[in-house]
Image (cartoon, rainbow, N blue to C red; front, top):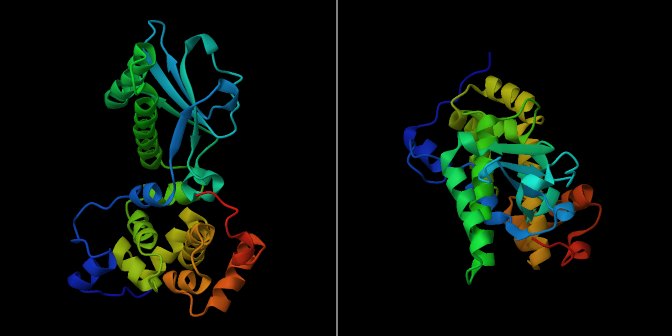
Length: 268
């Protein structure tokens, strides 16, 4: 068994972004901040999100499908269909989702209330209805993501890691402070595990070692910053690279081109 690394309480608080040790941490906040969520009404063939009614015409189910394969959907029960864009597969949370995510509104009364408001706005056709529907759908999607994180996944990946109460603390630390020179010992302490146990469970659950996940997360964020036009040397420093040359090599290995060549080609 590996040796456990002891970090003081004050040091631990600093590691989790300066928050008090027992304060709840947010597994979704950074994704909402860094990836633009946009929901707009769309025909079923172009939709990734649908809201279905029960036999009485009340909202019953919410389905999300990235592949837009709705062949099994009863269109007579369709209340609303929308295209959800959350930075596509460049968003690792979206990439980690199963092919289909389903929310039973009979088991979630708060989400059912949101769906009822969407239905009311659709039928009421009041001024400002489209923006209201879009905002309500965004909240519904956030609730859908919460549910999926809590449900976890039977395959290794980000969802499985975020659903683990120990690993998720380490993942949130990396998400919130990607430029920090994270050591496995520090992350293990945040997770409340010994070093050897942490590295073992992380690799098994997330599908890669902590250092590899951190590199991938940094480059995902760096790609956004390149698209915004930030300077390469600034981005390199922001994400903990010792030189712009080292960052450029890592970026080219991941995306196949130098940062400058990709600038402006991506939409956040």
